[in-house]
Structure formats: structure tokens, C-alpha cells
Image (cartoon, rainbow, N blue to C red; front, side):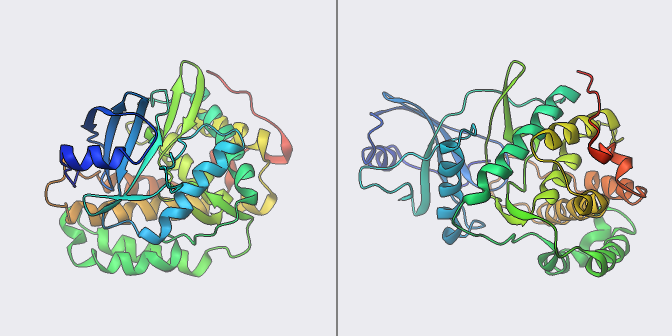
Length: 330
């Protein structure tokens, strides 16, 4: 999240007046991420998050994102709840941008997750997958296999400016994934971006998930692969198998992975690593004017991709094969 669209006091007060949340006390920009403009909004009625959706977000997708948060919250999953205006709508317009107000979720994200955090994350991810099973709206994943090559072509000419040989390596990986990507794994609503900064904890309790603006329909195990990449590598980019087994044990306790999902996890992890390598590479080479944050290093995910290539089967991630749970250390 960041701030790309500034709003005047008059615009803000007029917008908030359309809601039953009181009057504005303060509104401060949140300088994280690279997608939307986000503000911490305090009113006489409470604390909220105000989001203005920038040009990279398709306005037609917003009913899916906001509806999904409501759906999951109604089924007991901790997540922000969209606030409806007096006209009954959860989506409005502010400063020429689509905008929404959601409830404030208490908690903090952890910069150095432990195995226990990974276990709780796995459980929450599986609960989200089960809770989303009867969500009526559909949204195809806009950042999966068919979109990777077009995205790559927008960065290919300059990729070796980031690292020598990167272009050839990405091209080889794309060829491999296009030839081997699965087609028939269990699918449903996934978060698709469940990094540590999108998961809040209160003490030793997971309080909720945020930032559903990449959520879509795809293979459920792909979401697990995203989390293996984002939660189970150390700062030196070595894979921590204790965290891997904790995450997978937590997930399987709620929703056991099937044999086909288990077999495909190394391939899905390669695909997840390539997806974030490609989007980070594009952002690295195309920093938006006025961005308050530096784009994330794409080479982190190049290193992770190279690790996944060494995994022969899913036991490399310490999966509980045959239904056996692993013991998890805190």
C-alpha cells in the first residue's frame, strides 16, 4: 500500500458524510506496498481503512474483492469488513478513484515468522479455502500461467540490467512451466498474495488476514505454494524445513492435501516463485512517479526459484505424506 492519490479535506468530509461512521478526526496515509492509495481513517465512530483503487486495479473486480471479504467474515474468518454507505453500497468514488472504507483489523504482522506462526498461517489459509467454497462470484487468476509470458515480454529487453543471464533463465523456466503446468487440481477461491504483512497476530493468536486485492479462483495448492515461498525462507534465502513442515501440518489439519496436490507442490512452488519474480522485475524497471516506497528486489524470487528446481518431490518441503502430522516446534 502507498499513497498515489491525494485527497482534500473537503473531498474526504463529503465522502465520509455518506456513511454512518461519524465525523472525520484524522486521516493519515499508509506508506506500504505498490498497488493502491491507503489511509488510516479515524472518525468519531471508530477507526477504519480508506482505500482508493489505482489504475492497476480493474474496477470490475472490486465487487469480487469486497464481496469476498464480507462472505469470509460472515463465516467466522478474521478479515476487514467493508462498510456500506447509507445508500447500501460498499464501493464509492473519491478524488476520481473508486474507493471503499473497511473496518480496522487489530494486530501486527511479524517480520520474522516462527514455526508456530507458520502453523497458524497454514490453518487460517485452509479455513479460508473451505469458507470460500460457496462464494458465488468468480474471478480468474490474472497472474497465472497464461499471463506470465506477456508480462515477461514487457521486461525481457532490460532483464539482464538486473542480473547477467536472467533473461535466458526466465525464458527457460517459462518453457518448462508451460509444458508441465497441471490442469485438474482442486480449485476454489485463493488469496494469492498471503505474505507476512497480510497476516495479523495478537500475541500468539492469528487475528486475521488482509489485502484481498489479488484474490481469485485457482488451484488451492497454488495458494499453499505462495505461502511456502513467502513464509518459509530465512533472510539469507535458505529454506527452513521446520517452518515448511509447520505450515503444511497446520494446513493439512484443516484441509488435507490430496495426492495429486502433494505431487505437484514443487512445480506449483516454481510457478509461484516465477510469478513474483516477473511482477517484481516489472515494478523494479518501472517505478511509478511519486511512489513512496522502493520496489521489492526481484532477485529474491530468482534465488527461491533456483531452490525449487532442486526439489525432486514434495518431501523436500517436509510434507506429512500418508496423513502423518509432523511435530511442530515453536
